[in-house]
Every structure is written in structure tokens, then in C-alpha cells.
Amino acid sequence: MKFNKLALSAVIASACFASSAMAADGTINFEGELVATTCDITVDGQPSPALVTLPTVSVSNLASAGQTTGTTGFTIGLENCQGVTATNTAAAYFENGSTVDFNSYNLINTAAAATAATNVQLQLLDQQTSTKIKVGNSDQIVNTTRFDISSGSTVLPYSVEYYATGATTPGLVESAVNFSIDYQ
Image (cartoon, rainbow, N blue to C red):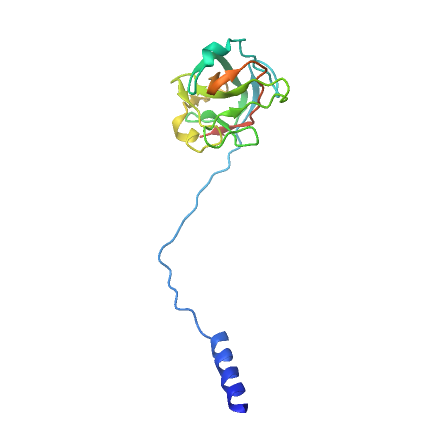
């Protein structure tokens, strides 16, 4: 019995002091940059939080999944930009949040259930290319049109539209999205 306890103690002690046989297989380097660029920001000339009103449309225009209607343009104005250089550009980055459908990258309808339209979302578009913006997805950084801010101001044009996820029913449509300005 004494021998078993002694042998067990030796095995445990050697396991505690065993060296690892791992080796590094690669290196990851990280880079970033902080800039002093800041601008006064407005949405359609309004300070944040701003309201963009879509037109009232018939549910017959959104009778099946994938249909869109009511496209409404809006702008994000950048003025009095400080710290810009001749090569600076800017674009809005529409952020992830509780109002984003992570499958469609559209904005969900957050109107109160008793008064809300159903099977409808809001889809954001890059107005320059009519390309869908995947809200909360990093694809925006490379797939959204960038605008020159070397003069100290610019206007970023975007659109929003109703997007059917199925046959819609009448009611209110409301949502919101946070955004930040991506300076490069």
C-alpha cells in the first residue's frame, strides 16, 4: 500500500512539472491608426437623433418576400472637419444593434406590436450604387462609396426602403440605427 501511494505521488509530481511540447506555427501582427479628424454631423440637416420619414405605401406593393418599395433618400452631412488631409475620405458605418436582423442585415420593425405592420423590414442602400448596405457587417468598409473630405466638408448620400419578408399586413413601421463615420 505504501508503494502505491509513493508511486502515485511520483506520477502526479512528474505530471505537474512536465514541459509543454508546443511550438509556434505563425505570427499575427495587428495594425491600427487613431486620427484627430472630427466633423460636425447632421442627417438631412438635422442634428442627431434625426428622423427620416418614408412614404405611406400600400401592402399590395409588398405582397411577397424580397419586394421593395418606398425608396427614400437621406444624407449625412459632414462639415467643419478638422485634421483632414488631401487624401482623407469618409463613409458612414451603420452599426450592429438590437434593431438589426442578423440574417438579412436589415432593420427590424420596432413599432409597438398592436400597431405594427408585419413581415416588413427597412433596407439601407448606398445611393451612389444602389447596393444594399449590410447593417452591422464589416463588408460596409470596402463595399460602400467613400467621399472626399479634403475640403473640410462633404455629403454622404444613402437611401432607405421598405423590404418585405413575406406578405405584409397594414400598420406602422419604425426602426433606428446607430452609425459612426469611418475616416480613411
